[in-house]
Length: 122
Image (tube, rainbow, N blue to C red; front, side, top):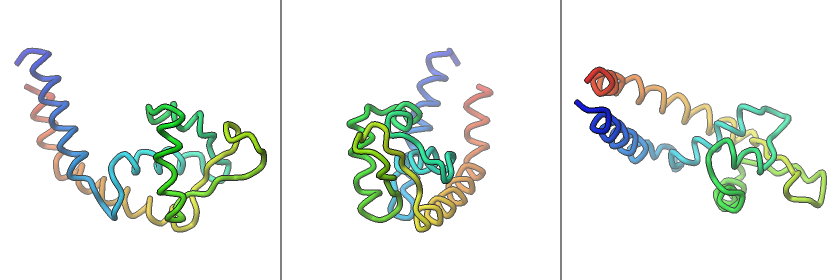
């Protein structure tokens, strides 16, 4: 199998994993965002830094955070009027949701690891 074919197969595999990883009403993209916020703990993370970490534009991260904030999973620390400097943290329910999703995603990854190993070996 050529490097290009391997790459395309791996990309297809990842896309399928992400499509099937709609868990607890959260998309895989939301999981990635929650994971990045959770990694910063109580300190929080600036939207600018979060956008960079998850590969979105600042306006893209703002749009992605709106439903999470509306559902009460994240909170914005209002220490300043400058939105670029405000930090995002997980709420208690956000931390619980993240923990549940992380367990489920890990279980799913364990189940499909043989498929991934086969792609990488080919």
